[in-house]
Length: 235
Ligand code: BEZ
Image 1: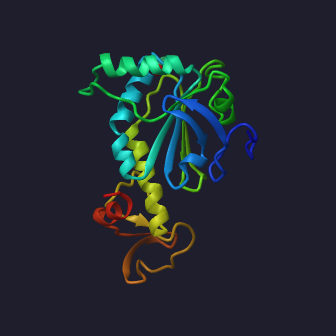
Image 2 (image 1 turned 120 degrees about the horizontal axis):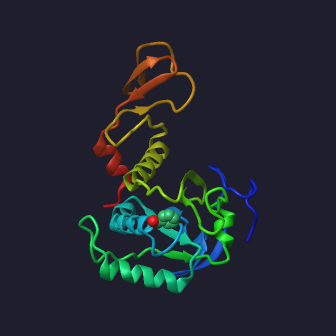
């Protein structure tokens, strides 16, 4: 395995560190096996814990939604494979939560008892825990480049609607050469150009499209929700 370009914590814009691992879905070679797909690599502190269980049920419930956006999911904790298998079986057979039941986790969950992968991805943060991974989220693009990194502490369950929004927003930014403003959702105006000047006029044209300029550094244009979703989501 190679060292990251930046020491112990991979950063946005860097290549995702490579590793091979055993998972609940067999061995994976990361990120090579995911070339051509977006992937969310995320860690959780421990199997058989309540916040993690609520997160796995939610993520598994949304797996098809992420798949339609060409995004695969890969989980990790520093537990062993048999713990993972037993926990996921318990979730499927016993847990009913917020209307979700018989939830099958079909995406790979990495066993990392040596913490090799967790350390490589900066998931062990000793101020929080020496023995458990924090709730890390790495969004990696189809070329294997890290595009977003989010860390949460042990006690805070993630917002999976936000992670889905991140995937759609990144793909929208790439597809239309725009940026997305605060709280952007498909159908909201996007920012153009992503950085720099867009002139002094209040309303300008970007090709044939009318832009709205709030000031010289802040211009937006419309892209319909239908156009965004048609471009990004697989039929
Ligand atoms: C949980 O998932 O509930 C959890 C895991 C580790 C520490 C605290 C909470």
